[in-house]
Image (cartoon, rainbow over the protein chains, first blue to last red):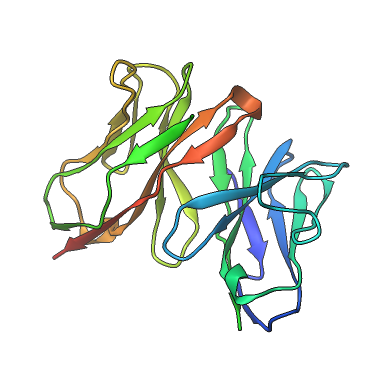
Length: 113
Length: 113
């Protein structure tokens, strides 16, 4: 398995502000991902965090709104920019092993007022 | 297109009842199949996986068999406990190592004492 930690675990933010979520994994992995889970919904892939290059975003997600950093193989950040109440969700970091098994962090529960 | 169809919930069972949560997928080729569980207030945990036809994944009393002929991966448990109350997500990895993990909508299970 894999150990994935995220900070913060939850936050309540004001409209128009930004929040940066950190993800630390316990082993070097090539593939790291960020997902969003809106209340009562399934998971939606935001982007693949690429080490040393720009993230690859899914349709409907843009870098200006969700900038991602991946400075090394064990760490990544996701920023939720210029937040609105519609951004209230759980944000999950994920990694995929060489055996093509994907693990998830505990999530960051974001509420935007 | 590629998709996962999962039994809709919520599902409410009494303790020690038999559980089945149906999951079928639509994809070309032979994806790897997964079940994840999300306990209240937590992130996703990998429950079990199967990577080829007729493989059976098992963990914590849960089982699922990769049925290529019916493109199904139904989750079963012979005797559920109150602690099994959670949301269960079926998923498959399409496109190999660089592909996307595609999720079902999730099935909420409540087990009553």
